[in-house]
Image (cartoon, rainbow, N blue to C red; front, side):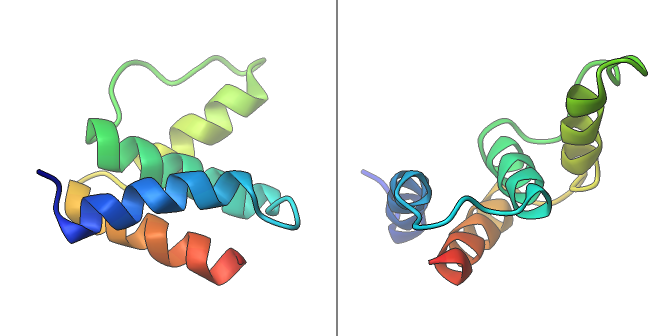
Length: 85
């Protein structure tokens, strides 16, 4: 049985696919990082190399959330999606 927050998080994951406008790169990175923090916890592995600019940006965004709880990351994700609607 899922909590109300998990239900809202699942709905936000669906809602983000149907946004009228594509989010800015900054918001896309925030969404990615919050999703990864909520579902996997703190970033793991090595930072991608200098030539992988996209991979580095995603890694850095996720690493910036180190220590944030999964529940708080879920709530922040839901809030961000709501603000983008």
